[in-house]
Image 1: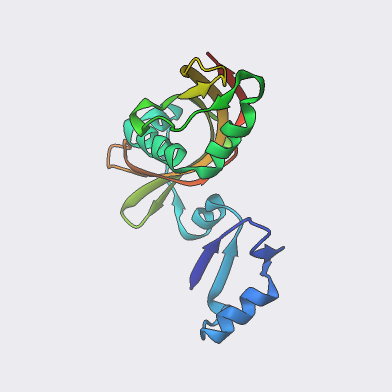
Image 2: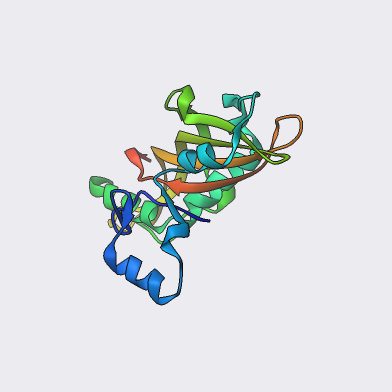
Amino acid sequence: MVHFVCDDGDFRSGEKLHPELEDDLSARHVDQGRLKLHRTVHGLLAELADKDPQPLARAGLMAEPVLETVRLALDDSVYLKVQLLQSVGALGSLAMGFPGVGEIEVTEARSRGDRRVLAYQVGEERWASAEVAWTVRMPVTLDSGLGHGPVPAEARFFTPSTVVVKRGDDGAVVEAEVVQLGPARDIELSR
């Protein structure tokens, strides 16, 4: 069985792939009867795994492997940088360059209810999936356009994400991956 997770309208319509994608699979000799679509990682885990009796504490979302993965995802997001460029407005223009990963501060994880932080066990491995909104502070450089040169500033915003974590025998987070990073919301820029 091949499991495909996607809630993107470019790939699917309801519970089926778009016809052109079905045709592509057929051309590649993929048995569509062996393809299972899931809208979310939660849906995939609910089908393939057993619930872990030890839930992931919200504090586990602030573990360094999770934060580092979120910082990397933010740093790699071209869409996020375009959003920041568009939000500058009256403060000037964004000068060349964004901060390095080490300068991005992720200060808070807010899950959207306990049903959004789920723990599973697949064989001997323990996993958790969480839909989380992160509070982010990121230094940026503004150019006022008045010949004063670059001005340090800070962007603050929230961004939703889905994070999957692998847990050790003691329940601690040992690995993490951001599988979905949403748009920045409530962007505030200050000098």
